[in-house]
Length: 216
Image (cartoon, helix red, strand yellow):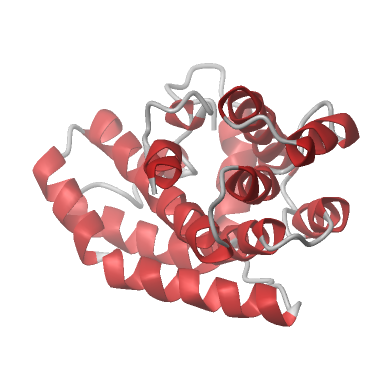
């Protein structure tokens, strides 16, 4: 359980704090402007990108071939900017994980992908190395898919942090449901292909900005 808490902690040096998960571009586009619109954005992100990430993490944690999963992640990430971000985050996570939980699986993943495996795959292998279950890996991925953007909205819009925390709490049952769906999909070997085209568009737009608060 301590490993689960550590990985979910925003202070774990995996680089997630520098990324908004599309929230910065959504704020600029006017789609996120208050807590209600943020919650709608987070709900959509959770059931699309969050579901895919959770299933990939669960599959990696249960011992599926990380090379195959990395290819699957690549196929499910049409935006070049998002692919680059995912691999950058995977590389940073793996660096922290190898220091915290030395394990041959982490070393092998690093050797196969020295420039970074996709973040959900790295998360699943990290969860395995840390002694966590596929269900816990999926729960982590689902949580990360909304917590990072929510935290970014506090900084971008000056939203009430108590209201944002309450919104995340109300999303709790949705996170649990997405994580459970992801675990079932991973166990069946039928990874979801849910897509969020607007997130892809936002990622490409955001990557072209000369001035931005977040890396993505």
